[in-house]
Image (cartoon, rainbow, N blue to C red):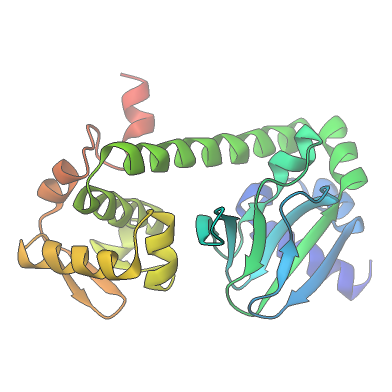
Length: 243
């Protein structure tokens, strides 16, 4: 096993979708994986193109976007480091619905179509992990659609902050670092950057949060949760499903 192959295995193992796979499975996936460097602003794949595999953000951050008729870019999803993307188009054998663009300089792992399909047929755990990744994305995007359709600006921003709080884990307490520039977050929430900043100030004035640059401290957690329209506290959905 070459050093480069070992490095690819290590990079795949850091990705959420592949972290629990066996070494044999990771070894086979690495055999069909290439690492590609993208500069900020580079396009990884475009809407309408045929998928050639799935991708993993080995470093840096990317965004999945749609363009409106008027040429305005809308951010569908921000892809953080160690997250995978492009699975839905590959597994449905349909063109990509979104364009993937590097937000920062980044390295992306590309796992080829044949390698993915062969491993899906061979390893049940890999299949379960892929289904889990797709299900999680569908759940999040449905929640985001609900935000846009039914919540006012303050509710959308409140839920975004709480979602960040959940994803960052209990070790962060109730302190959130905004995961991207305000303009990108605003686009994802179907707002302008000015509206997003104004809403943060409104939540601050109300005493629910405190903002210092990109750091947001949640002061009134329960009130923020009520404003977000959450019936179940973030992170407790799984437990509630078994009640």
